Image 1 (spheres, rainbow, N blue to C red):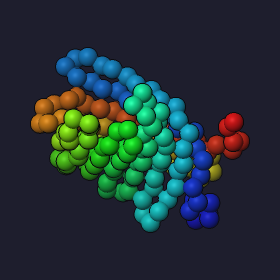
Image 2: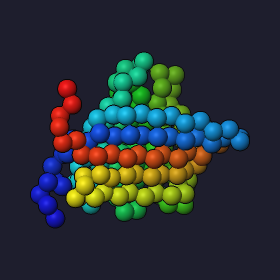
Image 3: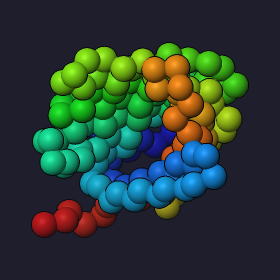
Length: 150
C-alpha cells in the first residue's frame, strides 16, 4: 500500500442528492473542496459547505459494513448506514432534536489509487420523526486535486 493513502489528500468533490417522495423527484448538487483519507479500516471524506445559517462541516465515513454521515456547525446531524438494517440517527435544529431513521438499500464505495478518483454511492429510505421522508440517493464523486485552487 502506498504511503500516500495514509495522509490527507486534497480532493474536489461533487455531491448529488436525488430525493424521491410520493412520485416527485428533487435533485440537489454541490461542488466542494475537501480531504480524503484512510484511518484504520475506514475511509473518510471531509468537506465544508457554506449555507445561509453558516458553515457546515461534513464527514462521511465508510467501512466495509457501515457508513456514517456526520455534520457539525450550523447544522448538526448524525446519519448511520448499514445494508438492509434500520438505524437511528438525529438532526439537531435550534428548535430541538429530530429523530431520523435510515434503511440502506445500496452502499458502494470505490477509490482508485492510480487515478486519484473515487466515488460513494448510498441509496436509503429516510424517516423523520417516524414519518417517511423519501428515498434518498447520494452519489458522490471526488478526485485528487493536483493543483491547489486559489
